Image (cartoon, rainbow, N blue to C red; front, side, top):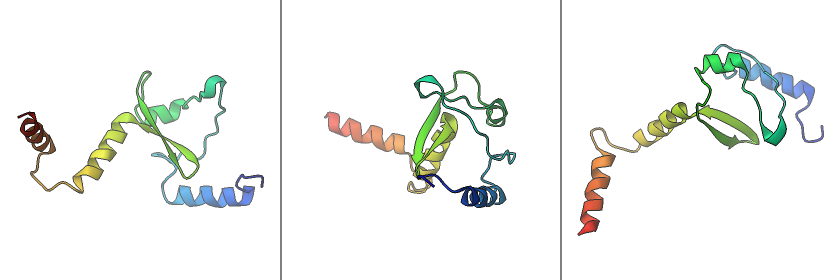
Length: 107
């Protein structure tokens, strides 16, 4: 296998990902792209359309389990906000708390 997933295992994995709805908004399946000069890849047009991505949009790259996950920046921000919400009580303002804390340190 030389460090790569065997063909049979890859097929099983892809079917599992497809069945679990993790293959994209419209179940696009696997799309293969090649890396160009300077490590550049092109996100295919149909994926950009589904994600409403435009030229110049920022993305966040995250290394997960030996793979690169490309996340539109606005989605990455929403994901981070959801994580923070789990730890902040309803009605509590982190901004107000931080400003109050900073004002206290200034004196």
